[in-house]
Length: 294
Image 1 (cartoon, helix red, strand yellow):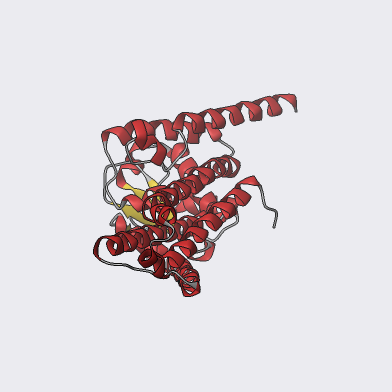
Image 2: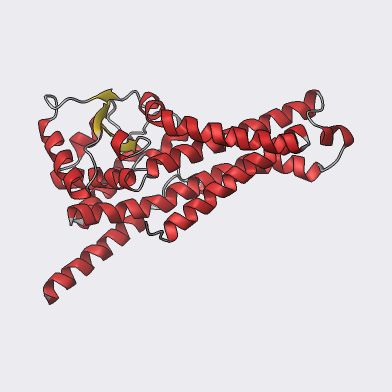
């Protein structure tokens, strides 16, 4: 298996997240047992997110199973694109909301699910919807669904450790270090900066994977322009109809459902939509030039 720059970046970011969690365990107990605790929590968090991530994501958005009888055209589209992507056909769910969005989840391609909202089915035409489905299939093929689940779970564990340390400082010592008054800057880092850093790292992983999924969708469908127009429609409608659900699941969605103004831009779960569209249109132009030269 060949590793590209995105895979290397993602592995590095996950490594930093795990390192923060191990460091948090050390400061919680103040000895080598804390390091072991950090490793154990990181391992359990990763396993839990690996096995239960699909159920958690579907429950967060109240997604319901979608049968072939309810959406035969969609089933045919997903089956055709699955063959092109060379992955097993994922299960299909629908999110009962007019907010147009979609996401993929599952621990591997053999246990994958694609969920689409009622709104996106009504908003996009056939080619645009194919682009969105192919985008989600690329996430499945690249196992981004697992990466995001692990990143989100470990980031949440880091935040929880920070809360425990805060509680200890307010109501009593939580470690040998805090009793001796040592490492105040280290404790400050774990209480305040580590949870913030974990969130930013989690979002960086999400943004890194979105460009790859857009490119993969263009390769599967052969039509990058369709995905570009789909993203433009989704960007416009996401401001009008917000997508409700657990914010920690936002990185799974094809379109960022969170506000994007001011400091909130730091916590964007996706790269700028305008840049995603620009790259897709540039790819479409390259394809046209190549076809003309043949």
